[in-house]
Length: 210
Image (cartoon, rainbow, N blue to C red; front, side, top):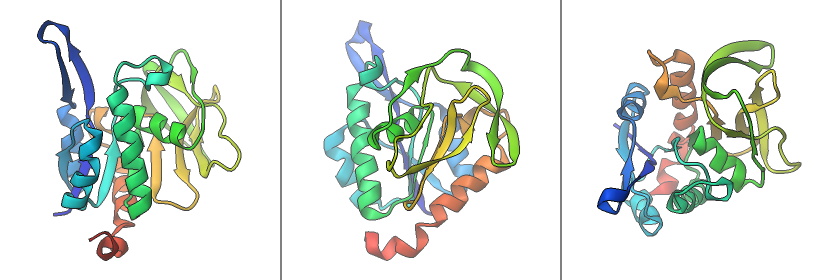
């Protein structure tokens, strides 16, 4: 079974003076249902290349939690880890998916700014994708309203109030959503199919990554 690695949020435990890496158990369950073996990675930038080189993953997932430091977040080690994983994904043609904070990291990497938004936390709303519309969950305080010209990304879906809800790269196997696929009561075929399609794009380049 091919491996997919995924990032973890940082929880700060003041009473123990600890910074803990952790992730919702449903993330691993979602990746497994997509047909891959889920492996979490620590927020240690210096280990990123070693992990990717040793595991040779079929895909990388940047998960939710912790705002980016430049927007008030308290986990700069996550920013650094996300950045190097994006760079490794691009360099080695490894398919990359980001959700919520993961999408924000991808937007930021390609030069797009975020703004504070309201009524996007712990709600459900419609997103509009070409001629289609469907409901998603929402758990974010910051979002992007407009992509920078020539950033390489393109809009896939938006909300009625103009928030960009999903993007893909024009040429690279990169896709991102603001919603959490793992937080659905039952994982949705749409989300599972998206991951399978995206990560299977990497099959032909497996030899190149060894």
